[in-house]
Length: 368
Image (cartoon, rainbow, N blue to C red; front, top):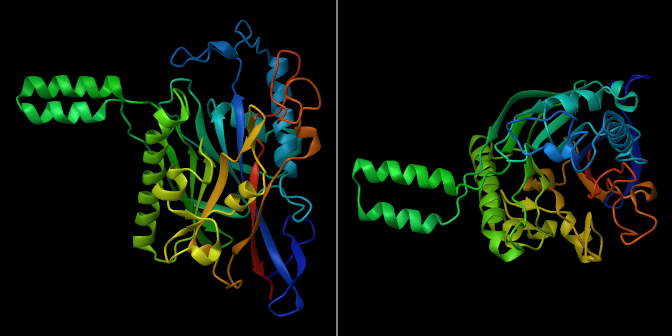
C-alpha cells in the first residue's frame, strides 16, 4: 500500500498491548453532526421554514447564513484531530434543509480541498429538515443509496380495530384517509453502501422522531425507528453475514433508552455483543457523565455511532473500529449567561454552531 506525500492518507503509531510492540496503521474518521437548522434564506412554500428567512423570527439573513456555513466547515475540518490530521472521510448530518445548503457548505474554503460528495434526499418532515451523507470521493465510492421511510402513526391500534369490523370499499377509503391524517411525518433513514478503499461498508444516517409531547408519550416512535434500523441491518447481514454496518445519527434518545438497548439491541461492552449484534461505544461515555446535548443542566448523548459485531473483531488486516469520541472543543461551548457550558448555538446576538456536539469513531487497518 503506497503513501503519497500530498494526499491525505495518514498513519498512526501506537502500542498494541497484546503484542507489546509498535505497529503502523492507516486511519479514517467516520463522524456524525447535527447541523442544527442549516437553512438557506429562501421561503420554501412546501415546508414550515418561515422562521429561517430575513423577515422571519430568526431574521435569517445572507450574512448570518454564510457565517453559519463558515462555523460548520471549521468544525468538520477538525473532527478527529489530532489522531487523524485529515477531516472525516465520511460524515453524516441532520437538520439540513436541502441539497443546496450542502453544496454551499462543501465549497467553504476549509472544506473545498477535500472534494466531498453528497448523498441527500428530501424527507417528509414538515419543517423540511433532512439527513444526508458527505464523503471524500478519493476514499469512499458509493454503489447504492436509498431513503427508507419510517411509517409511524398516532392512534394506530384504533385504526386496525376499525378495519377489522368492516371490509367494504367505502370503509377502506375512509381508513386510508384516516391513516394519512394520523401519520407522524418524520425523517427517512438514509442507507448507503459503498467501498472504503476497496472494502465494502454500509451506513445508515438517522434523525429519529423528537420528544415532542414528552419523552414517554413519544418513545413508541423512536422504538419503531430502532426496529427499522435493526430490520435494515438484518437485511444487509442476510446478504453478507460479515457486513460492516454503521448506524449513526441524532437518535433523540440516549444509549440507555429502549429504542437503542432493546429495539436496536446495542450493547455497551464488546464482550457482550453476540454474533450479528451491535456495539455502542457511546454508552460507556454516558456512564462517565459525558454528553453531546444539554437540557436543564443535565447532559445526554443523543448523537451516536453504533456498529455491527463485524467491526470489533480483532482482525486489523481489514478496517476495524479503534475508538470513539465526542468533539467538544472549547470554542464550541457557551462561555457566559444562562446556558454557560452548553453547546454554543445560534441566538439573536450570535451565529453559533449547533446545540449538539459532533461524534466520531476511528477505523484503522494495519499497514504492511
